[in-house]
Amino acid sequence: MASRQFPEHFVWGTATSSYQIEGAWDEDGKGPHIWDAYAMLPGRIKDGSSGAIAIDHYHHLEEDVALMKSLGVQAYRFSMCWSRILPRGEGEVNEAGIAFYNRLIDLLLEAGIAPYVTLYHWEMPLALEMTYGGWLYEGIDDHFAAYARLCFERFGDRVKQWMTFNESNAIAECGYRWGVHAPGRMANPDTEPYLCAHHLLLSHAKAVAVYRQEFQAQQNGQIGIAHNTYWPEPASEKAEDREAAERAFDFTVGWLHDPLYRGDYPASMRQRLGEKLPSFSPEEQKLLIGSYDYIGINHYLSKSVSHSDELGDDFSGVIGTKMKEGCLDFDAWDQGYPHGGSAYPDGFRKLLEKVSQRYGQPPIVITENGFFQETLAETSAALADDDRITYLNAYLAAMHDAMTAGVDVLGYFLWTLFDNFEWSEGYQVAMGIYHVDHTNMRRTPKRSAAFYQKLIADNAVSL
Image (cartoon, rainbow, N blue to C red; front, top):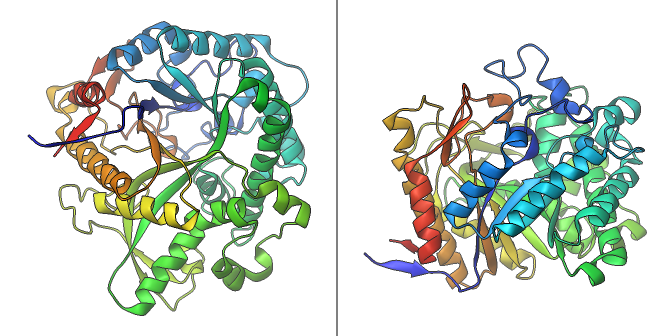
């Protein structure tokens, strides 16, 4: 069987986030955050669950790191919970929280696994939300920079790869337009998503400035940011559909990355949103431009995009496009993704090539990629996840094609290690390569775990 070999120093890893796996939501001095509160509201999580216990990673560190070592991964991407470290988001430090992450980092290094740390994966400390208004507060960037500085001080001697935020566009859209994620706001959907994203960008830039000015030279690490992306495929060759797809790219990838590359939002956003879109001062632009050592790309799916003259109150209406769900040309999985869209490996290649061309061929890390599947009990059907293997094989081949075309991809992080709490979907969606039995927290490898283990050992994807 033919295969495509990856570069010798290509990094293979897996990824998780704190609320989705840690549990121990109120143990050892941890303060509450917005997802702790949001998940308690009736009807917000489809199966009525929460991440309060999740898969109890907090009490299974040694076992979980041993699983990673057995897979052969060279890196592990995880997030730190702001309110586990600073229970109120500011002020007194929770040393028990510091000790937990120190223990995790040390276990990883002992296993030969590099820690890739995300500072914020959607868990605003509840005290900052209630006192100031969270990401809608103009001064939130100083709070985040202070939290980042503390993490650099306490962990930066061993952590060499940092990401400030995970999926800023998802934070803004799901939390402030549609209200399906914490804090669940829909009060001002035409303005608050853009204000939230604006403050996220400024918080990122300030944290990067802190790292570069105070820590990077001594600690010799790198810092980036991870964006959620889909590929907008024009529904036809009509000029208006191609233009609609360009707008869709602007309003997703361009929205959060153009300011980091050129200091402002895409022109199409300025044109269509007007005063709804905040502006950056010259000082803020200087802080933003170049504030990353690499770009993190989270990617799962593509969408067929066509022009629409109707402007609705949702995201697709705002940008004057129509997003069609359903497969484009990859008919194996027309099951409907929770976030809308379809599997389309060639869309992954096209996305990577466009990002590379648009932003000056930056280093790229695939910080998330994986397969959505309904949760099943621990049966042979659940563990023999052949659809996931087919998906991963096709997407990794597409990524290799992009690299052959000149895209500088440094590493790949499979989402995710375990079947975990999948936000508003609860535990109804299984994305892990290990099944977790919530009655006893037993971790059982799926067939995809053996697939990924072999792929890493071979450093190649089969055709």
